[in-house]
Length: 329
Image 1: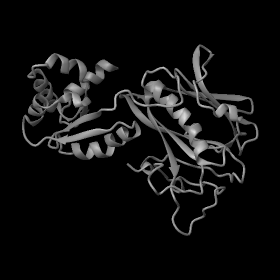
Image 2: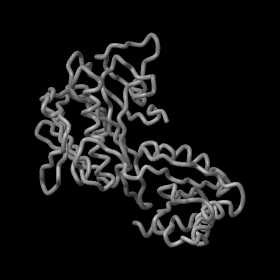
Image 3: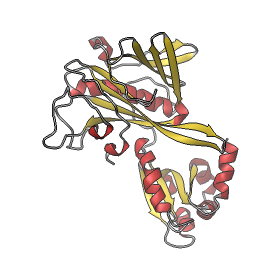
Image 4: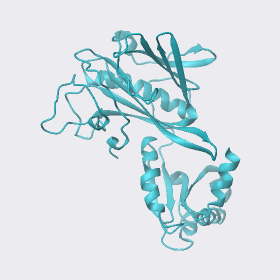
């Protein structure tokens, strides 16, 4: 899926010129922030085990201090801890701090800037002045801008917000731009350290190396009932759920039910262990179909124990999903 679909709001009004450094882009304070810091020593770039320190009772794995180019007295510190991603802004004696909990972070991806259309400026020091100008793609897409040696780390989070009706998840994207070096490979290696560390922490694994490989490479099984509720389950999945799987880098197999009890027979007869879990898109009916199908298997107890199940409520009443949500809260 094209990474450009998930670009954050960008408002970098200052021309960065020929200086190298790191940039952070986020909604912290309501505007994008352009920052520049000096290069780190070569010793910091060596592969190996991640050094861990303790600050205020939290284990800190990575820390970067950013100097905002548009404000002389403003420092922006980003820390990755076992609690989450801490953003600390210090400006003219005042301090503002925000921590995005690990449980709200679903994933992160390393991307490259997309090749600009013919006629646009190809200068690597051009200012990014508005969000529509920053487009990113996968490294191997063939559309990357070779003149931009930057590596972009996109961190995706869905932060729980409270209101009178209960709560909702607000999508937040933090973008870290690494361009301290003259080669993309060097900048990408630095971005990959942050990505690997975040991936390990989100998965509940110890952070020991600067590389990450998921322990479970199986796909997720998605079973969708296109006729549930108002008949918009397929549309809702493509618009609201599929992008989340892409952000979390979780591959999946999508199966559309064809008739009544189709899902029941599917999980009863198939080798369900080919998948890491089951996500059901529809109402209460499809959930009970799948649950009954699993109980009809000879190995039902193993299947129930090893296959977690999730619900994307798209039915008329969604009573089961509401109950689960109530108990979760």
